[in-house]
Amino acid sequence: MATFGITLVSSSGIVVESVDVEHKSEFKRLVGSNGTQFQTNIYDGSFDFSARGKGANPFSVGIGHLEISAVTGKAFVTSAKRNSKNDDFIGWEASGVSYQYAT
Image: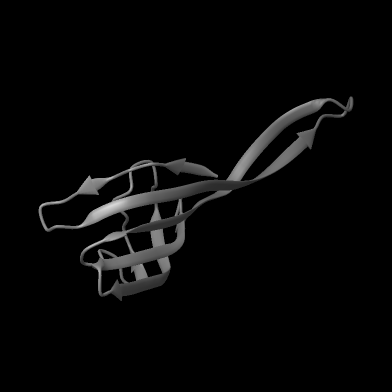
């Protein structure tokens, strides 16, 4: 899993502490008549992602488009959490999957 140590502060006061992205794909290997590899096809690319930070939660559960670079396609946010403590700013966490070739 690729982990990017990102701290991003937007004009609305949202601080992104971390973003984790994992790219997954299925592949099919085709073998020629002589037994050697002929061709490999990759399909069903997807990205599993999770993000956490402070401030207003920029995610909500549902279908949408992500503003995470290198993650393309239609995103499905499956979990969006908000937490608060007396001695810290309001925090948030979100995770889901983005299907690379979905429209």
